[in-house]
Image (cartoon, rainbow, N blue to C red; front, side):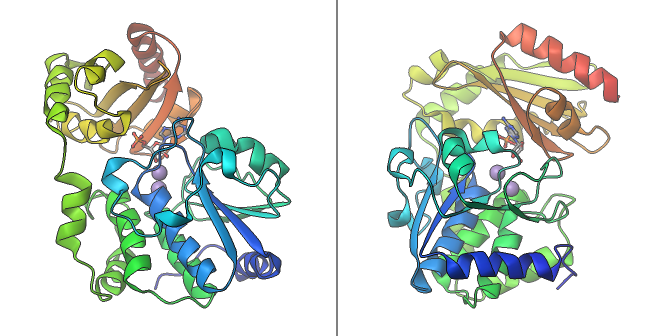
Length: 327
Ligand code: AMP
Ligand code: MN
Ligand code: MN
């Protein structure tokens, strides 16, 4: 295993805080992806087996697990934000680069006695009372796996499924530049528990409602390419016509970003509140993480996002302005 940049003393402090808590409240970022939910549930399983009371949640106003993550085991440990402890003695948060990414659970984190932050975003400014943060880790799931071992837990198929969902999503199926030998070594440990990687891949990427194709068609119909920037948008109205939930839009950026002539790709997705969730991707030359951070969001060098309350035109104009500053 590669050396871990998180000092042993910090892991030990985390074990101490967990050891003395009767109940541990886990959280991950809003509209969770495989890494956020998978990392959280893997640690939830481990804590439950240690005899801890465990609650786990994410702070979405409309609390539903995205359809493509419903195959993950351990969802009986999830509670809605309104049933979450108001003042947890110990909270552990996963894959959230800022306090705000906790959504409705921000106030619970603010009143929690201790908050351990497990994350891999370079833009993580170190909120909470203890950080287990490695900006080089390809996924939070890599840190979650370490936490499982350090807690004395062992991989079983449930925990491995959760961790694998995190690893495979955040590495783009082992395609991104973040992939190291340690990533494949971890994958080997997970697969050795008997995972059906084909079934997991199908759940994550190869099942969509028919309406997805129609909404994708609308998005592709309006795609534009200008100065190496390819972009499009999807409205609430597009989705409403097919009853398509917001979470189903996650894969559109992966189609748009393959445009050979573009260095940067952007997809604006209107959520149920009418705000634009902006997904951005870079091929490496441009740090979209810093562009998005300047616009109030965050993320990684090649994959980042933020929320915009402006119109599509104004959002794109502001994005271009920030992009020019780093090009
Ligand atoms: P997405 O385009 O939603 O897949 O997000 C890509 C990356 O950007 C993820 O690593 C997220 O953590 C980050 N990100 C997306 N939206 C936001 C936001 N509103 N604030 C901070 N980071 C974000
Ligand atoms: Mn995430
Ligand atoms: Mn992640």
